[in-house]
Image 1 (cartoon, rainbow, N blue to C red):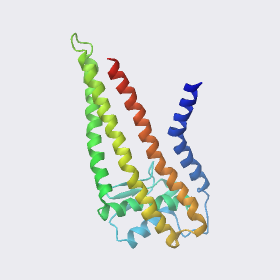
Image 2 (cartoon, rainbow, N blue to C red):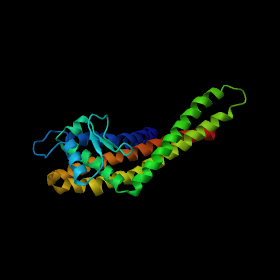
Image 3 (spheres, rainbow, N blue to C red):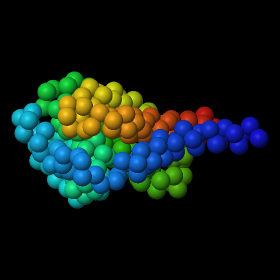
Length: 226
């Protein structure tokens, strides 16, 4: 019974934030004629207002800012939608543009981590592919241990990256996006709902860190058993 409760608790930690995001998105996805524009229009307006060198594109599979290409990409429903969710997400992504172009240090550190983790993941994948073949060679059983250590290092790096991401997302939401939206872009009554959406989205990064922590625990347990 205790194990069942523990599993349910972990599932709640891992899946709860995404459920919250989806719920808040649904609540904010109604088209509204009283809002001043679409998410794409708001993003373009903010780029002009703050003199930001960035392109705004729709049609993306997910909402994000690409700091290398200097492009904010929004899903069609947020680029073309005149909804609370569209304006909130657009303001948040433009917050990342402001962080980038104003030299916000945690944002810059996150970008360095992202590059390092990409290299780690590729290296780990190559080691896993090559090492799996060597496992069949007599006297090469120690390779399995090296593969587990490689997976552990990558997992720990992913956890650190997720926790490093949290303050960056929090700053983009609470120090930038919400004050911008409160400056006449959203009715005052809509601000609490916008805040709930941004909070739920930030919690997904915490859930991802917990998922990586479970993954590291699995590999560590496997290593100790060898």
